[in-house]
Amino acid sequence: MFNLLKRYGRSYKVNLTIGPLTKLIEVVFDLFTPLVVAWMIDQGIRGGNVRTVVDGGLILLAMAAVGILFALVCQKMASRASQGMGTDIRHDLYRRINELSHADLDRFGTPSLVTRITNDVNQVQLAVALGIRQLIRWPLLAAGSMVAALAIDIRLGLIFLVSTPVIGGAFWFVMAKCVPFYRGMQVKLDRLALITREGLSGARVVRAFTREDHERERFREAAADQAATAIAVGRLSSVLNPVTFLVMYGAVALILWMGGIEVQVGDLTQGEVTAFVNYMTQTLLSIVYVANLVVVFTKASASAARVHEVLDCAPSVTDAGNKPVELPVLGQDGAMQVPALRMRDVSFSYPGASASALCGIDLTLMPGQTLGVIGGTGSGKSTFVSLIPRLYDTASGAVEVLGHDVRSWPLKQLRHVVSMVPQTASLISGTIRSNLTWRDAHATDEELWRSLEVAQAADFVRALPEGLDSPVEAGGKNFSGGQRQRLTIARALVGDPLLLILDDSASALDFKTDAALRQALAAARARAAGEGKLPPATVVVSQRVASVRDADLIMVMRRGRMVGLGTHDELLRDCAIYREIDESQTGGSR
Image (cartoon, rainbow, N blue to C red):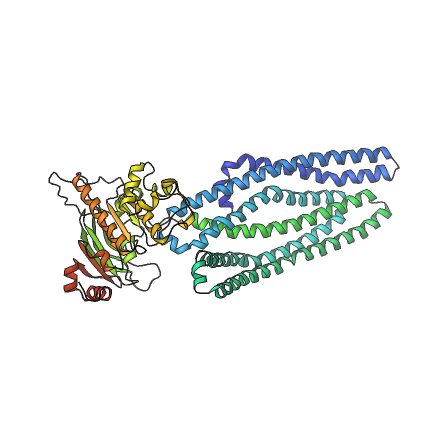
């Protein structure tokens, strides 16, 4: 928690300084209030002096008015500091999350990151606000009241010295038991967020399989588990207030009894006893509030540790020190000797996995060529293409793009040269234009329409009333699956990438549209070569033989290994697995 304050509090030094100072002034007024009351009792009521009582009342009103003014200033400073720091923390968290590699994101998990950037930051904000408004007030009020009480009568002040450690011991015991529970609660909130996210995002699938009761039961169990932990913490915390008030009222009763004796013998006045009781009440009530603050800060400490875990996570994929790569150009004869993609004995394993996801991949793809990747589910196809734009780093071997190891590229340049269309078509709320310009914010309408034409999406976009400015709902839910896929393909084509990856991104397209897409991509490559530009290479991952059969090279994968590499005819002759896939889809007709 203190590390976050040091890290983000510098921009709010004025708020963090003025807030506690104004609260300090308010505390001073609170400490003088019992003395004024004692003066009114001893000099006014006891002596029958109405003027003293009136003057005392006016003093109390003035002190209250000034105290309220300073309290409002403190409230404003606390709000500015807490909300500002929370905004800064969320901004840095979001930026760091976007810097993390896929491996780092896999380690944290999306639901946990969502909980950290929302619930955990809220806990930190609350702690900052209460720290300014109350952390200064109650300890100072308790200490000041104790000093003032001891100044009135040392013998009665011994009651403070006995009751305060009793309450402090209760605090220590309860908080020591509560801290592990608070940490566990955050983990269970992550689990609850995961189930909620799965249930809401997959609502259509849940209903299609009539699994509503099952999902409700999963949610109920997770919520009950989290509630059980919260109840356990509540039971422990609930001990604090009864113990505190028992000690406080017992101490007050003892003060009244002993103070009454001293009033009778003339060692104390009635006003001093009243002031002493007020100071005693202020002290013990302050300890009660401090106990509540301890609960808040304990939660905030657990949340701050989770926030720090993300902020301090060094991305496993970085491009520090990498200089921009000079892109190759076509020779005068139109020949290109530098491969668009080369893999040298590439292997990769996911953290904690018992087996390698990829093992010993070797291949070369030249500019303008197409590589088809085919294989069964779980054969490593998506993992293979994820290494090309360096979403993951290889465990061994090297991945080269245009003659340079991907680890030597600046990530921004690499991911502009390499454009990837993932399996799941993902669109962001906005417009078609705002989605298409992700790769090139300055793309012209002509470039956007050209990409839409190649992606076979121009016809349905033209049919929309607002064309490129037609709205896109979150996730592209206002478009069909095939339309979403075509829009994501068009988005990947904007900016003329030199290596295009289609990771099973035409699965929702019918055979006719799929064929037209492949023909348009081939025509785009030919057009680029005819204009003297470097023709883009294409990597097509598909379950369909029809989608890859015309590729210059086809790689057949099984259990993370390349079991075949060649043209369609070569693989039919030499690769039994490819032949089996082809026969299962074509019925043996070629």
